[in-house]
Length: 330
Image 1 (tube, rainbow, N blue to C red):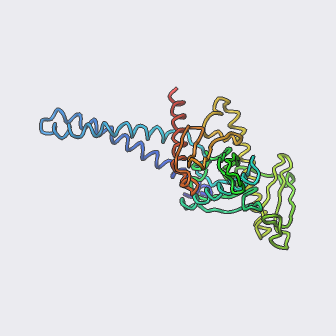
Image 2 (cartoon, rainbow, N blue to C red):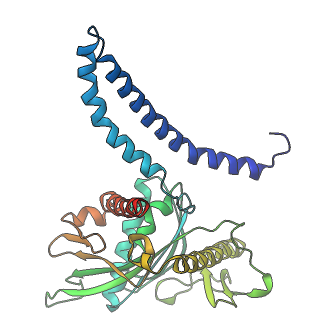
Image 3 (cartoon, rainbow, N blue to C red):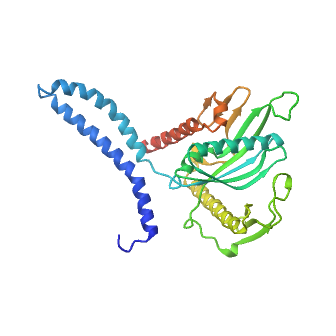
């Protein structure tokens, strides 16, 4: 294409890859419909009647499935679905046990990311003295990361006997998960006058200094009050990472604001992103995981904690799609 820039070509390639499956789904539906009409016309031909009577039931059985696939393909898309994501995990109520559970969630998502071939990049990780997680910020790179993980945002509750509990009593604690679609440079422009950049020493678990150089970077976005820290060994790389996380958080804030303005009634939906909502309970004594949004209970907690999340994510996705289809039918 004469005069097209690299960005234009990339945008067109992305649009083509998004439209191709829709076009293929339409073509499959039309093909089935044409085959059914042709088979019904063959009923009038004595020589072809027997063959037509065999084909028609099979074609009629496949048509509703093709129509459903077409309706799904034509649902409005969240343009952020194809993006990489920033995963943030923090312990909630429950002290040391909450931090240990936050660490368990972090490992669960890492295993899931590895199983899907996604890139896992630690941006910030503060560990507790017992090996739990005080705070974790992770970049997960790959195709459709946000689409798969966006329903994970919210409060995750655990019920189990803590390793620190000598009496064998079951405790309840919680951790908060936030999944943000990674912002692109064109999404958010940050005025250099709106940020303050501080450098400091990187610190590990318990506050020990990992190295003697002032490599960690903390960026404060003054208008919003958002503070981002990155603690890799390279100060230049830290600044780059911290700016990317800041863009992502500002982009997410804009998305949340737009979502809230669109409709109050939709706040009950699965993908509302309300991070104060208790979304899931992990009950270790019973080996049970329950997602409260769709009343899904799986008695396979060990597999879930090992990163086997597809069943619950597929169910959440299907529920959200069913809601959108119902809205379109109104």
